Structure formats: structure tokens, C-alpha cells
Length: 503
Image (cartoon, rainbow, N blue to C red; front, side, top):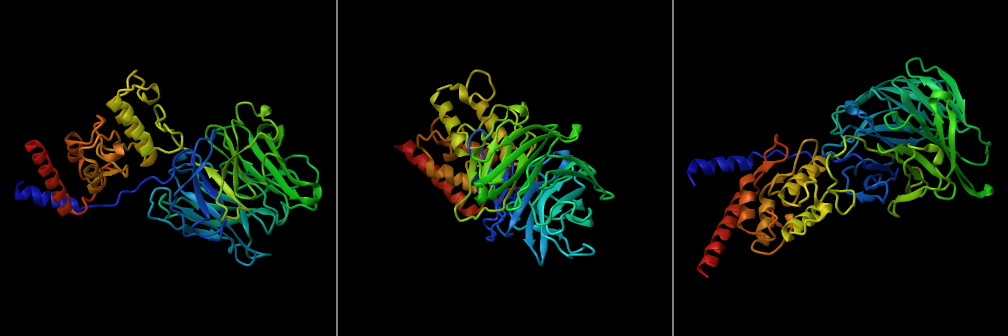
């Protein structure tokens, strides 16, 4: 190797910039557990609506008591997985609630960025606890329920940079006081860019003009009053998914025999008339917040830290059966989970045949290793035929790398050949994986069999070598780590090859 090539390679090795990776994906559920331990306050849950959710390691571990939570609508995508994640701390009576923005694109940003609170209110209480966070479709405003004032508050919202910084809220304005019941958590949601719907615990539905803050009685959901309970209401609306508004009212009353859960499917185009009413009192604990995924499944949190799901509430709402919800996820026993919130991330689905072969809601080593083993063993299993050409081969492996990269790293990014640990870069760590498995019959990508021929050998080293120190994000250059160790490893490899040839 010439001196110039050595210098060039060393320069590449030390010109490393840490690559950002997408934290959240379409279909992810973010759970606001409202726990006092910052490491437990927010959870990222992943898995199919038809199965169960699995908690996934997340980055948000520095901000406690996050309850209501919602993805904003960056780029015109409602609840965008690649947008800003907003979280609400319900707050205390004397300090009021707070609104934060969290990163979805930079795993190094672990704390929420405080956007603001209620200290700018005029007259009466100077602060209020907050609930029921919602973002306007055009991403320019935020609405919340002022818990201690029975009102709806609207802020103008400047979105952040999706990495936790740059966002702000200002120009706080408020509806009339006591529009809603005092000290009840009541649902709010945006019906359009300037109209907020609020669901009072007495069954009244109001529309609030976000410019004038004038309110109009818009409809009513009849149900009996219950003075001995502390009812919750929640709303979920996304016209990209359904023309209907989904509304819940719930309470726990030991005198009345326990939990009462009522779900209403309402038609905003017809005075919020009730299309269907569903009783979920025995299939779920006391309901908290609702969220629609982009496939028309309705997720909701409950008292005790559970997330339940009602599948396909969109295609035929009138067919939703009583007590048909199922428990989708149960949080850690260390989390109280009494007053919780959630949202489901939306976005452009990953194209092509689903490469999540083990159906765990993630693209990882178990999936690609199973594909490589099928290719190496010549099984030609239809379940691994990602490109649909009737055979399972290297083209399906490249299709998987593209699909998994799109889901795990970001839009348009494919995993590179030689990226054994699937971290988005081909570097020393991948060489070390190859080196520890070299000359073994191991048909597994994450063990270094990049050629999918059933052995880890020279052909796989050559694949790694052709992509070394490159990144799935072309704006970054990965670090080769200890260049000296790499040279020693390559030297040891060459020596081994010579010894094998002599033998």
C-alpha cells in the first residue's frame, strides 16, 4: 500500500460524524405513563395491532410525568412518525401543566424541550393543570383542556427540528371559563385548522373557534349524570382515516359496581349524531386516551397501565361489538399507570412484501438471518420471496436490506452489504463480527455471511472490504475505530489463509 493511500485511509478513519437514526416508525405506539421516574415516564411500544405490543428501548429518559402525548403533523402527515413528538406534563395545582417537544430523529437527545406552560393566563387562576393535548392539521396550533378552569386553551405552535430543539408556543388564548366541568379530564381534538371540538363530561360537545375562542354547542351524547364518580372523556379524529369522531366516557364508581366505559362513534357532518354506541366496561379497565392508527384500529390506554385495541373500527363502525377490546400491552409493574396517554405514529408505509418474518414488529437480525439461512440452504420458501419472482436469492436479501433500512434508519436509506450489526454503517465492529466467525459454516448475516452461501469466508470479507467506512446516510463517514487493530486483524486473516493453503 502506498504512503498516499495509507494517509487517505487514516484521514477517512478520523473524519467520523455520528449518524442520526430514526427513533420512531409508522405504527409505533408512544405511551405516556406519567411516572415520576424520568426513565419510565415514556415508553415506545412496537407490534402489529392484530397481535401484542412489545416495549422497545427508547431515548426519552430525562423528563418525568409525561401523560398526554402526540406526534405533530410535520410535512402534512398527520401524527408523523418523523415529526416532533409533543408531551404534556399534567402538572401540579400551584405550578400548572407544561408542554414539551421530544426528538424522533436524534437518539442522542434524551430530554424534552420545554415549550411553555399556562403562566400567561390573565385573571382568575394564574396557572392550571393541563390535559388532552392535540395539534391542528396544519401544524400551526396546539389545543389543551385547562383542568382547573373548565376551559380550552389554544397556543400558536412553531414546530421544532424533529431532534428536540427549535420549537415554541406563544399567543395563549382561552375559551370562556367553566365551558367544561372543573377538575375533570376532558377530551379535545381538532376538526379542521381553526376548529377545536371539546367533549364535556356531561355529554355536551362544543366547537371552539381557535381565532376568536368563541364556543358553540354542537351536539350532545346522552348519558346519565354520576356525581359520585370522576369521569374521563377522550376524543380521536383523523379525517385521513375516518370521517367519524371517536369519543369515550369512562369512570370508576365502587358504589355503582366498578368501571363504566362507553365508546361513541359520532358523525360530525350530521350534528355529531351517534352512529354507534359500544359498552367496553368488562373488556377494559377505566379508559383514558384514544388514538387511531392509519389502518383504522383504535388504541386506548386504561387505568393500571394497559393499552387496549379495537381492530378495524372504520370499515363498519356499527358492527363494533360490546366488550370486544383486547389487551395489547401491559406496562411494567413498577409504573403506576393511573393517568396515562398515547399516540400512534403515522407515515408512508414500508413498500414491498413485509420482511418482519418473526412478526415482532421490528426488522432485525432474527429476520435477516432467517432469510440468509433459507437462501444458503436452497429451501426457496415462499414466505421469504420478497420480490415475488418465485425464487429466494440475493435479490430478496437486497430487498430486505432496503425495506429494513427504510423502517429503521429513515426514508430512502438501505442497509449496506457488510453491515453485520445493522447499525447503518460498515466499520470495524462489522469486521470484528466477521473475524470472530470466519471459516465457520454459519448461514447468518449478523454473523458475517454477507454472500448468503452458508459459510463465513473470504467472499464475505471482500464484501465488507468493498463497503468499509461507508454509511447508509451518505452525509456521514463512519469511523474505522482503531485502525491499528483493523490492520492486525487483516494481517491475522492473511496469515491464516497462508497456513491453510500450506496445510
